[in-house]
Image (cartoon, rainbow, N blue to C red; front, top):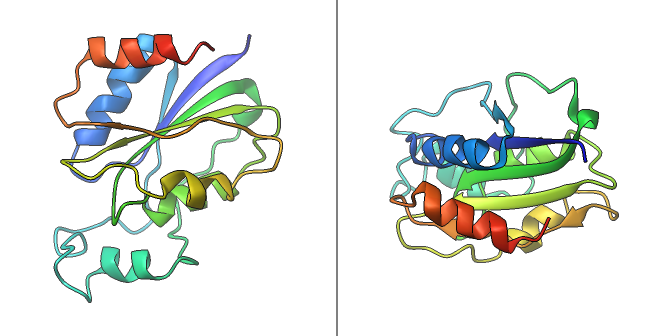
Length: 160
């Protein structure tokens, strides 16, 4: 079996912490999906209809740029992709990430953090950003206080 990658996007540090714990549990390498233009606190104000995140999430074609592309994606067989839930789906930068690579024959496993929202239509909108022969697993939502045992139980249940 090949290597495992844990790729994540995080603005507040919650998803980053979960991703680091997941990488520890699965023995995977970590990759930060870093936006070319960092999000400010004002950008993330979901109550402001003109904030950057709100504007991006209203536009399903929005694809924020990522700082750097991975050169070695072919080395990985399993790719966990983490993000916070925004408007009941993944932020559109996750579509940018998925559309940047060919995941044919690879297993892609999304995971999300949220204070209370479930994953909503995340799988519907993300799965279409991958090639048809990607082994797609359904997204899993974690609370912000998820610990290593919670993550390990989930991973064990994936039967990879």
